[in-house]
Every structure is written in structure tokens, then in C-alpha cells.
Image 1: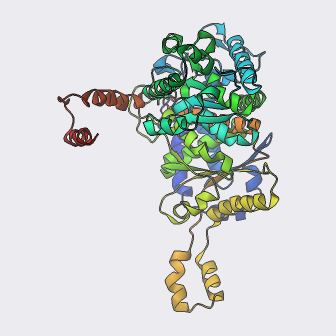
Image 2: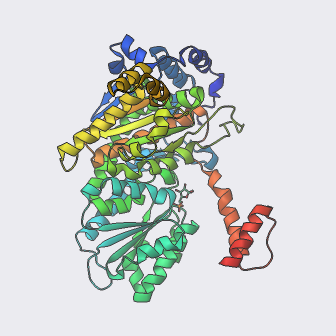
Image 3: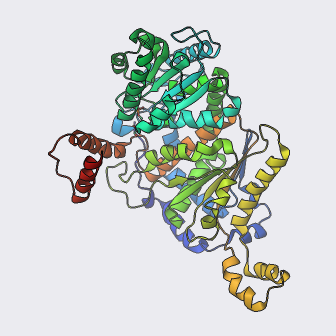
Length: 547
Ligand code: F6P
């Protein structure tokens, strides 16, 4: 079985959306709200502790129905079933895509090549739990008999971004262990971190699905050399553990087999935080919080699998995103979380969305004749308001934005939280309504400006409005609600890939640069230089002279 293979632009619904777009593209959301008192309710999905209001979008009832027709036309439901059933939907790598299985219930059954993988998953979870408890409770000790105080996660891409984002987002739930993340091959990065560590009390978690990633291996080797300056080879077993599918390579590195946490090739790197790749999360916030994160994701998985398309949160968000990307020709989407804790959330999502859907070849092997993957970016509000909101409000580009907020703060400082939330709500309102010339006129007149000065200022102070936003309101930031939120975006990415008829689970686009870097690295100490373009050649010579 493989995924449906349908060019979305050939469907009846796509064609209908195209002509519908022409007739509604200039409509003002403000007017739609005025005409339909039920609009906000009709375009809101309430699910568990999530309140998702998508009414501030440039859609009508008809747009919504046509988008749902599009989902039917590309046979989305069938694709969702293939995804959950463990079919090899990562066709170009001949693999299943089963991060959902990692958060399944113990009683569930998920088959890969005829074998139920749930028992294996639960064995690894038990190992994560056991190891976490031993480290957190100080039962497991370093080479001088002291309990661990610090954990260093060494990995990059999916082996870094997910764990780093979750630990940072859930820092309120952290225990006494200090966590660090070494990712970049930039030696200054690893040296900065080493400078903060005591070898006697630091645990190193090397995370690499393939265990061939140059950045991770370079950092791991540098750290091991530093560690061996203080210790002996025998002590490595106490301080280094690895998460990988490549057991042989890990053993070659010198890690004890008992300290290897397995993962599987049916878990993509950027969707792997739910596996042992999340070991640093479990260590940093404790196993029961890690489990709550997984439970939250599982609840979203069940919702995504079973909810009708029109009240299915990831489906609706994906279709709206496609509406802007393919009809309004928006190029990017902003993620604005009104929580400083979610500081790394947009960065994390960049890999999830852009490594998955940054593709231009369809599932037939042909070049697509429509736009795919959106650019994802963002910063937490209110900081973002003081940085780039000017462009969203008054620039020339249409930038749909997801606003994420929490109804309660964690420390309970109501004064701050009210200010934060007022800004969240006010910004979506301002983006919707804008500010008309007559309003600006009135305001300036009240400030006693002359008519001449008012006329001169009027265009600059006017806001066109009609800027789309989704408001995602969640009761509270907890491990469980974060799990739901991450899974929501994972499934949104899946739906987009299905509609765009691309393969979302390979990442061949990251290979070419890696290969060329290896060639260039080999040329640094020799005189002959391969056939580079003149620009690269000059830059290489410049570097060779100065290094
Ligand atoms: O950047 C490409 C990539 O393959 C990502 O998909 C992955 O998350 C990352 O490299 C790290 O790979 P590994 O876990 O094998 O070291």
C-alpha cells in the first residue's frame, strides 16, 4: 500500500477554490464578523483544554467547505489510516513513519513488517524510566562516587532541537539536574560548555540516530578527550550513554552496550523526541513528566485519527495554511507564543515543517507546478511586538500567524499575566480590524493637530487590517499540553504533505552541502584544490591564508 498520489491542482475542489478565491480575495474579515454574529463560534474548535479560534481568517463558510472537499479529494482520511497503520509511507526510504506509536498505550498494537512494535517501545521506556530514576535520585554515580549534577546532550537537528525546546519550555518542572546542549560543530560552542562542567559529576548523552553525523561525532570526541584528561578509559562507561540505531558504531566509540538506548528507523529524526532521543528531557524534568508529555501527544493523535475533518484541529490548521500558501501566495507563517517558555518553539518547528515539506518533487517523481512548504519563523510575544510586528501590521506581505497563549501563568503573577494576555488578544484584534482613516483622523483631531498636519500624517497612521491569525488558547503550560501542541503541529505538517502530494519524511536536501563540506575539509591542508566555482575558490584561499 502506498499513499494516494493526486496532483491537488487537478481536483475539482482546487479548481473551485481558485474561482472562489477571485470572488472573495478582497473581502474584509471585519465585514464578515459584522454580518455573521455566529462567525466566531462557527469557526472555533474546543477540544480538551484547547480553544482554537480560526475565525480571524479570510475565509467564508464556502471557503471552509471547499477546503474540506480538497481534503476529501486528495483522500486524506485514507492517508491518515496508512500513517497510523505503519505502512511504508516514507516511500523514498522505504520506511514506516511511526512517532505516533511511541506515545501509544501499552495495550495498543502497531505492526511493522508483521511485528507488533509496542512491546519493544515499552521495554525502552522502562529502560529510560529506570535510568532516569537512578540518575535523579543519585543512585547512579560518577567515577569518584559523586551523584550527577549536570547532563550534556550531544546531538544536532532532530537529536537536539526537540529535547532542547522541551527542556526549555518545561523548565518550570525541572529537577536539580542542570542540562546543556551541544549541537553546532563550532568548537567555540563545545568549549564554552566544557568550561562550565565538572567531569566528576557530568553525564553525557550522545544522541545520533545514525551515529555518523560529523557534528555530533566531533563534539563527542572532543568531550571524550577532555574527559580522559581527568580520568581513565574505564570511567567512560559511567559517564557516557548513547541513543542510536547504530549499535556497532556506538560500541566502537567505547560506550558500554548496556548504556545504549535503541531507536528505530521508523522514527524520523525531527519527530524523535518521544523516543529515547528524549532521554535528556526525562532526566531534566523527571520520567513522570516525560510520560505526561507523551500522553498529551497520544491524546492529540487520537483526536487527529478520529475527529471529523471539520472539527479536526491539525486538519483545519493545515487547510487554512494551504489556502494562504497556494491561493493568496503567502510565503511564510509566524508562530507567536505569548509565553517566554516557548522561546525555542518556532526554531524547533522550522525543522519539523521545513525539512518535511521543503520539497519540489511530487509523489510521482515530477516537479510540482504549485507552491509547497511554508517558511516558519517567530518569537514570543510581547518581545516580537517590539521587533518585527511593524512589518506584519503595515508591511506589504501577508503573513498568517498562529497566536498561542495560556489562560493561567505558572507562578501566578496575575498582574503580569493579564498584561501579557491583553497584548495577545489586542494584537489579533488589531490585525483583524486595522485602523481606518476616519478613526485616525478623529484621534489626531482630538490631539489638536491642524487639518494640514492631519492630512500629511493620515496614510502613515492608517492600518489596513485584514491580517489573518489563528488563536490557540490553552489552559496552562504543562508537560501534557505541550505534548498536545507539538503533536498538533506534527499532524498539520503531515496533512500539508498529503495535500501537496510530496514525501514529507525524507530529507535528501541536506545531503549535498554535507558532501561538499567533506571535500573542502580534505583540501584545507593540501595545495591542490578541486574544481570549485571562482567565488568558492577565492573564499577557500582567503581562509587558507588566514587560518
Ligand atoms: O539534518 C539532517 C538530519 O538527518 C536530520 O534529519 C536529523 O535530525 C539530524 O540530521 C541528525 O541526525 P542524527 O540523529 O543521525 O545524528
